[in-house]
Length: 360
Image (cartoon, rainbow, N blue to C red):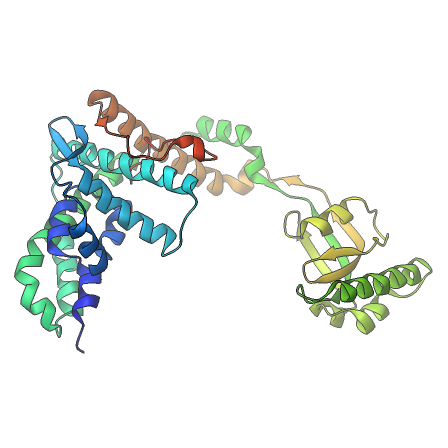
């Protein structure tokens, strides 16, 4: 199969761009880094050169503004595709990318300090994968010698971080007291929400229908409610009028958890006692008539029942903390100097928290 040069460059990336970014981009950006398109490279070539303009200093390492711009372009493409994102989202992503580049430098140095070496077997396997995928590509064969060194460095870089992450997150097994304490402090995680059993008659209306059609459905629903409250059989009326799949069962719907119903339906059900029929409820799909058949209150599962889930959640929380604590410690030991002058102001963002504690 012949692979076009554009497709190949999308998969492998332009060599010049790869050399600039390979030593910086973190694990979260690795996939996007490989998807850089030729158009972005050409656009970068037309910008005023930023190769030597510092974006951040991390010890004796300088991250250039071009490296930040290239990494941000990749992250933005992966997150926003071709759409124009709100400025608040751009402001947050700028900080995520900036923090990620800084963290990346610190983490690689920490991996080297711990004498972690790239997994040569895994790197070779990945390189072999590229060889296999593009073996019939003339472009790959022509540029392989130039591309492979940068690609290999990138894969070795990622291997270091993957091993460091695995090492740091390999926290000791929690003891029984620690597990019980976690369970007691997070009972909401082990509580089954309230469940309700319903009967439903849904008069379907297309969301784009004119108001007259919605009014007609509402009038029909009100007439159905009146008949039901007068003693009519719910199942029979569901068979005759409902457009929901439950009509085949007389409108019967088995128990569902709180949160599974549309807000308007949940609000109506919350007011009902078993056996009581609701007023008509306007939903996205049409107008509904509901009857509450039964209610199971929220129930806390005992620790023996949820022990494995509690264990897994606790271990994950401890591992997350160990990783974020390492990054925070590295940043304290080597405070980065970052030029944030080109960041959009965080005031534009609804949730103005920088992600300094997250490795990207």
